[in-house]
Image (tube, rainbow, N blue to C red; front, side, top):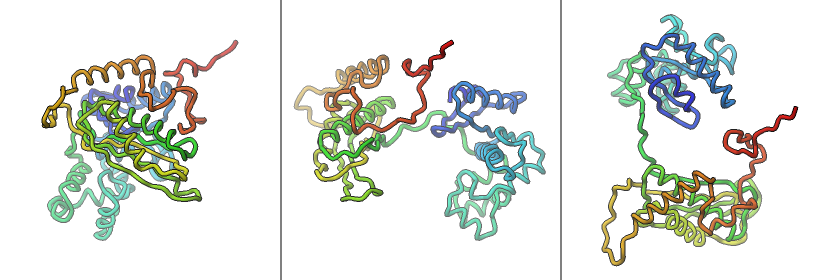
Length: 347
């Protein structure tokens, strides 16, 4: 994402593998710049990607789809648009051809149900969608679809989200490397997941008031089935110790021997900002500031010296590897973050 940000001055990280870049007005040779950024990502990170360029977010998304499909599905779009597709460089006639070649259901913001409704009235392509009457679209469907139609016409209606809203829930779930049938390894795993969730919570300066813990067996393996969860109330907190303690109590309550559990997880619920105040009668010294300083110190230590350097005892010993941990035999080598995995070249 940091390399992709070199394309322009503003960036919205939309998902783990996708981002929007804004502020490209006035940049000359934009397609050449996009190709250079793409090659840099491929060379430095080893991840191939495609770049779509358009005057609106919806058209940029569509251009990206064209760039991917032109490379992966020869014949679906012109081959010269593979990897890099800049709609601004295309003639009006060619842009119309591209929109006609794109199904309305493939347009960003058009869901399956709306696509079926559109097909009932003969709207099958992105071009057909762009020609609809705006008042009719708003009246029959929604203002959201009206914005999509406007964006397909080149009118920007969806701004870059440069400051995404804080998450309302934070989850940390994993499948076990081997089935777990005893309580102790389950408690270790749940403690580890609760620790990771608490770290994510502090990164967004949040406080949680509820925690959900769950565990279940594999739906694809023979044997008795188990699928239980429990919500544990919390006093507004981001303290790892309190969150882990709640997760452990929940795991103890739902555990039952005789089942081969294959997955467990912890979900923090009802998250608010640190400015939230929970009013209650103070019968003891109020914790908070010292706890916050302690958790900040723990986060800094773990950031500097490695994950799990300081951890709650219920997660168990960090080494050797635990039986419940994920199997990662085919994980990509961590050349840039793990010195022991740097490849050795002998003369």
